[in-house]
Length: 317
Ligand code: NAP
Image 1 (cartoon, helix red, strand yellow):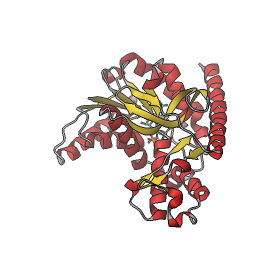
Image 2 (cartoon, helix red, strand yellow):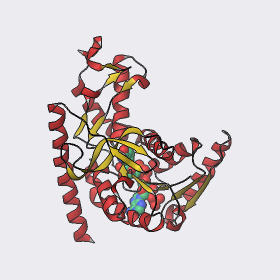
Image 3 (cartoon, rainbow, N blue to C red):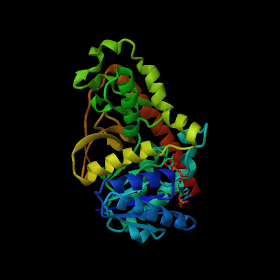
Image 4 (cartoon, rainbow, N blue to C red):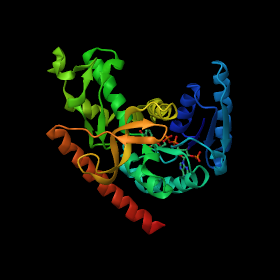
């Protein structure tokens, strides 16, 4: 099992690589960076190996700026790109990151043509679309991390409100990884019991909680400069489910072709069955009227941004 992380010197890339290595699932991991960061990723790989030895885990971690070294990777995590600074929106990154993602997606197609791409770079819904088009991969092989992390954040906040262990909270956020995310409250249960049956449901202000989920990343960035552990563990979840062919339903950014609300030609967060083939099925869901309207608003916004970024990108190419 071989996995490559592009942007391996970055805070998210290196944390994800370590998290994955610690799962004792992959035999080989390649951290890719540009030449200027080669020493940094070499240092990271040595440090990681020391830590893994303490846990009796052996992973061959290679630091490289040679794209050929990703050959035969099962999954390539694409985490290279400019991150948000305090006060920036994810959309502010779109122009710069489109160039980076397009370039790396072509390299993946050339050197790891049988891999699955997990896009992390923001704005992730738009970047997933660009990676899909530029790699030429089939749509099941390209997905993005966004709403899985949002769903974990929502789980955490609900766990606190209801004072119940986080593992008992089953909920999901779909739509945009951004302001137009949609919590699926009608599909939310705690320990198998619909959330609205709980006694303290009346004091559960979903709008306020969703605002907290929306600003969770920004809030962390304002305090420590970046998010790391949250995205890293969310990436590790997704890669694990793929490599172990678990067929679990996770929410990842996927290309839609009419499976939900007849939406076509856009990448958005939706529930999917994940396995060794990547997105093996987009799970069709029935939403409440409110959820449906919010989801369609997310479609409108992400489609418009994707078109804007693509037009600009094609002019610059
Ligand atoms: P970071 O610490 O600044 O690292 C950025 C990484 O991108 C470095 O590895 C760097 O590679 C690479 N990079 C920067 N400019 C590049 C360029 N012009 N060409 C090629 N590579 C370039 O950033 P981070 O905090 O890890 O965040 C990385 C990305 O993940 C950002 O876009 C961020 O917004 C996104 N993110 C997404 C989520 C999500 O849920 N989807 C969560 C958190 C962060 P070198 O080693 O070559 O310099």
